[in-house]
Image (cartoon, rainbow, N blue to C red; front, side, top):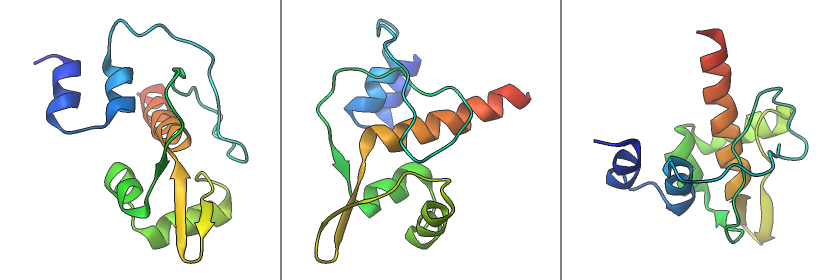
Length: 110
């Protein structure tokens, strides 16, 4: 099965599918503001900005909301966006860049 097929089979959203698309043309590289990762990040594509819920972030990064909050406070995870009373979201591209940086860091050490 191709990488693109694996991404679709696992139900990863359209942004990750774009990363798996081998015909995707790399664009500018970005790092989420306030996060010093020191590693390459994903090429950005012209996708609409989207906010992810805590649950969606938890499903992507496999950390509890409490752990991501600690990492946010330490400056090692993208900051949340307050949407209203008791509701926050995370910018999807920042989370995907954070994941890509973790993968790049892993690949650099092997």
